Length: 258
Length: 258
DNA sequence: TATAAAGGTGAATCCGCAC
DNA sequence: AGTGCGGATTCACCTTTAT
Image 1: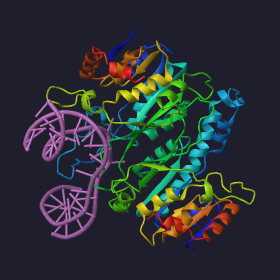
Image 2 (image 1 turned 45 degrees about the horizontal axis):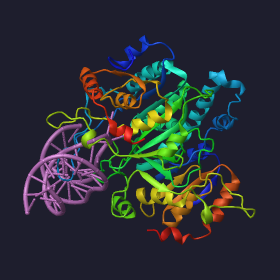
Image 3 (image 1 turned 90 degrees about the vertical axis):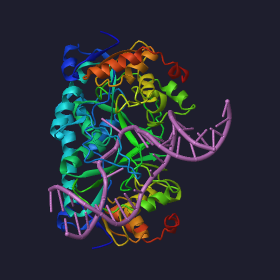
Image 4 (image 1 turned 60 degrees about the horizontal axis):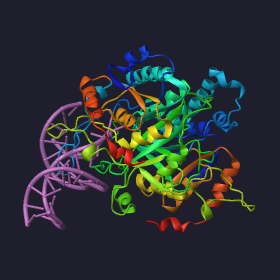
């Protein structure tokens, strides 16, 4: 089932896959829905559970349990010489980072995706939230070998060692997948440039890559463009369809950038 | 005991302070770096790494317990309309961020200190680790009021809304405190520009600021320069002495930058 | 005295293989 | 697992020394 997007919850699909199957994992997990609802509440209008610490804790606990399940499975299907990337924002990345450390993952870098065109803070109550964090980890602290194409990254960076800060625009323009009405097909489509750096830095041609939250299929598209194999897992059939449609088209503009 | 550096472990000193005393807290706790071995540059010179006793913890649990203690006390002595900043690296910030969320703190921003001159990765096995993270939090999600001098930050940023990425050099040159032999007096002295942004963005003149890990006294120095009051807590007497010595000198170059 | 060259250094979880 | 060794490996900025 190589080079496919499987429809299903990764917590159910991953247990059907053998130990040490993948050379690389890229995971872009969802936020806790309950947390997001809390975030979206109108300012200063408090919802019933404000003082209910139990409710709050149960929200975190539910998200933590969800992450623990898919992360444990990811660790199992990752080769002992493989690495894993997990992207998130300040809403979830601290919980995930702490959990990964406790599981035995060893952080290699905390990459900062520095958005060149972030959404401004309209009310002027905070600094413009301009980054997302991508954790790059090996499977254990003792792990000796992993793929890092240092010289290629250095070349991409004009001959100087590439830093952990990646200045990349949000996915907009022609790259952004939209329906006939111009409505974006996926709310959090990641830019190809981001996946290009992930895949070219930490895999070799022919390697097998897993994306347990495939979404619009950026990981699969970039993997295909660069001769890597992939397996995507995606819960919603409509996103599976979108990803397959996307994979039909060659994207030479990615290859031009090498 | 205003505008003083108290010598002692903040876990013992803070319980002697009344509830809701401080308008702002800036905390720069030990990072628990857990360095594995010595590191040499390509020219074979040894890197003078952080190897202080105050940064040694036996395991995650010990570090977590330590952080839980000082964070709980900080939350108690912070005014209900105050905010707290905590700086760390990928070695500790995920543990701290998760813990703070669980305690009820509400993250306003995850500021990225983007070092303009970070130490390179000499072995070429990772990306240059170029950032530290500073969490800016209010005391609870329900908290309506807190100080954010939006217009001043905008002015500092050339008229555009300031982003959560702060490009600031490491503390070197004349600003770095050194003994007569040229040896750095503190292994992790923070740049004044960093504290300037923290203090000017989130306090007003006359506010009272706590730094529970005072170290070389950068927080106190910048607070004094900008007419804020401070209380520092520092475990080691030698650093207390260094900070007081530093406070004797006016630093007009900070004020020039307004 | 001015300019150029050389040297030092910073919160870092920094090699891989053979024996 | 401990040791030894071959080989690949650095950026920005400041200070000191040399021309």
